[in-house]
Length: 245
Length: 341
Image 1 (tube, rainbow over the protein chains, first blue to last red):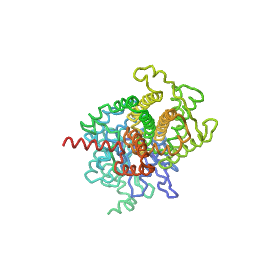
Image 2 (image 1 turned 90 degrees about the vertical axis):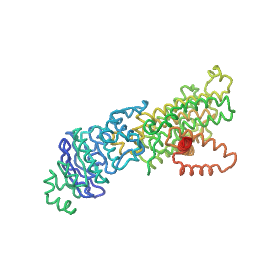
Image 3 (image 1 turned 120 degrees about the horizontal axis):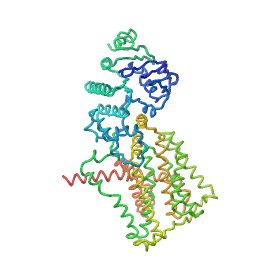
């Protein structure tokens, strides 16, 4: 599904991501973990074209997509959510998701049709499935943090992605919110047959849902494999899991 | 920063029965009828003032497409106003082209120039974008100022003729009005048409894409919006409608002068937009009305008009960030609550 090969990025001499390679199999749930500053978000930004890689390749379904800009990438099946919640704060919940539908279905250049009822059913159905149906008319910026994260997931899903990249989907959430969000993401991924790749700081979450884990440390991959193998890996224990004891 | 509801809210979701019934009232039609009645009811002076307000309302609304809807603050919007004014003026005065062609030409040429300048401007963001728009506007001004053979240079181009409005003299009701009144009526109808088009645009899917860019360009990019291309399209549209406003203004003003494209005009139209409220579609028009009337009134009392204006702006920006239109909405809601209580 997604292959990352020797991806490298340096900022003013500081190597943030160094020759990173890993695969994400189709319909799998994969996680990238690592301490703060390990390069997780940079890696995401390289994959989704927000940053230009110094070297290496990103291959999606056999197609080289290295350096393809975000607005094109999300047309060919890549959905993404951001670590810092990223929605359209002054628009309503309905308008947020509707905008994603409009853009994805190529209606954005229509200058003369009233926008209000376009993709109304699709939008409301999607909001319903995320548990936001009753809040469609609310201004998105006023929602709770957890609800904003769910809305952001809605923005990504409106693009009908094959693979969903979630950067810290539970950042800043309470334990309850975290559990609910993870359940929601799992359900949505199963229903839609999505491939999931996410970064996460909560180890409990990671080991409970990931089928494959890639561990980053100082910009390098130090382990890559099924959870049990990663958990047993000596170096991972030393640099990462160990420091949590 | 606390989010506020934008002007794009849907009454069906966001408001109760009050907004819906108030929103259903055909306000724009009422204003249009009132505007058409000015020559018959008011004096020649009021018609003149109204004409001024209406043209500036279009100019300010075109700017608001950038400032209020796309989140791009242009400091050089007068460039397109000036280009439009010179286009219509030159065509009508020097080449005797009829108004039916000279007026749309203002929009086309201003839009084309906005495309050329915009390609460079939308590569920058925020203050750099603003500075580059200003720089291009100053270039336009300098060309108007120096190119004596074509633009008349510093002296400008006085005596732009009125369009041939003899047909209005054959219509009932308006038959006996002056030529300037006939031109005023034409202005009202053309501006109403332009505002109607702009209103359709901001309520269209394209308009929604622009608001996503205003809210969060990074996120917009990742729902598949080609941000720069949309910004450029908004820039061209805004320029074209500013050009149409300029075309009308040159005739109304009985002459076209380089200061139409000068930076003070750009700041004036920006002030109108802020004063009226960039969060709503009609805000800039309210701002145009307020600024021109205030100017008229205060100038007759004091020479310190800019000081008074500055004070009003400061109070407004701190007290009512939604501008006059925002304040009217707020007071309307309070009043309604009082009436119900």
